[in-house]
Image (tube, rainbow, N blue to C red; front, side, top):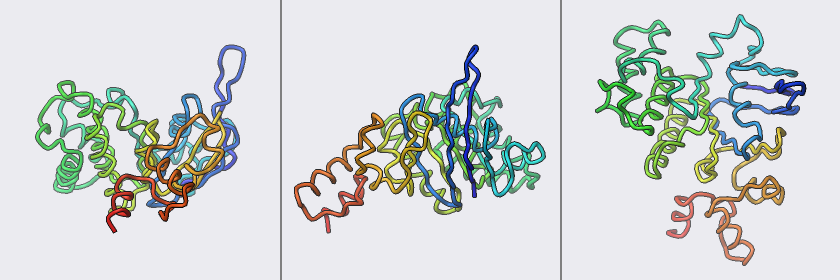
Length: 272
């Protein structure tokens, strides 16, 4: 379990201090699929970096399975438990061959060569890069590099996987496939997936949607509930098309499930 207890994060800018997150308290449970939304500057990336100790809070505490991220003794164990995938994959790919990049983190887990090989094969299969395993990463497209970064994180089977705009370089089909993949992996292996995205349609299948606004935790609940909240539009965000359609049908007194937020759910409901 990850717990944020009254977390505030400030940055020094010249002679002033900028508050990126203000008094945030929340809990992320094992196996949860959590979406994090908010406009630029709302504190999303700061929150992501706090979750595995890349940065430390100015006030308050971040606990990963009871370990304080501010305690240097736990740094390596926390980063093993909490995998990270950043928006720009070039910032985290360091090996000259695709399969070596996927194996790099796993090799530090002291697994047998056979276990490492199976982890690499599985992760490459999951993200659709098996045919690129012997390529140099710099020869991959932007979307393929992003999938490589996801594969490298998944291969370590972390307890939590934090993804900051993981689909930003993918086309529509690639986005859909990666989201379904992450959903499936999270459910099957009990990995908590924490995903930040500007595309609210990608966050609709989440168990929970957290909305940050001006550094504060503004909304936190099931996506259908958050999208229907009157406070949601006050953040400057707009619900995705399917929740908007669901809300419109409810307003017109049509018999429809208020929890429908994805196209798949809508199709299933209409085909009953």
